[in-house]
Length: 344
Image (cartoon, rainbow, N blue to C red):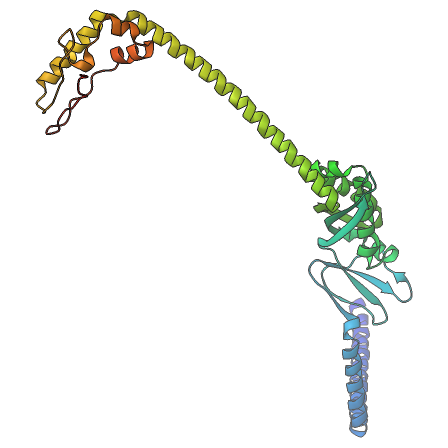
């Protein structure tokens, strides 16, 4: 029984759905027919409207489609709600309504060169050339845009860096700046600049000091002082070297004196005669042509003849040479041997 009662209800539901479907199809067909008729009657206005819409879209393209390139971040300003500080638009393409505005910030590391004129501890003008490397804090670009603006380099970075350079250099005298390490001064300037800039939504990576220029007269005076110091150090070194050389020569002279004394004490007439006989025998055995003058009381060559009186009158150095030096090598074949003629 229940199955027989449900069959008519299903047929009725199917019939209602089919009727609704047919009416919907007829309505859409009627709408399309009327739109086609309207287009045929007003085709020129339809074309003009489409063209006007396209022109407006193209004119507002730059205000609707906003590209954010690599190394950039965007901040949106809403005409009705103001700057969106809690959202930063990353790299990519973003769509906004044309009455809003998006400002693009470069969040890469950037640098700026400046020359600051500051006073030293003595009140002298000193020029300091620096290179400042910085970037905005990417997560706080919205706050930077609201509180500082796009001109934050001239508003925050350069003034705070100048104040840091002035505060650090003011602690030194000019001659101390000339001799002090650049790295120590640079570290102090960088640390102070970072501390002052950070609360203003930007970061300073480094403040590099390229040159410190002192007044011309002072610079020349310091250079002359340094030259005199180097000359003094050079003279001190030379004096010390000469002292060491004098000490070395004194030790060498003492050794020579001791050696001469030992040799002089060991010489005798018999030893000198023996050396003369040996030299005469070697000369006689040589095949070279030679002229030897023989004379004196011992029958030796004149230059080798020595007696007790000659030995006594010979200085220690001469006696040393006569006893210690070996006889001269015989001359080469075919070369005559000559000696001084005997005195008449």
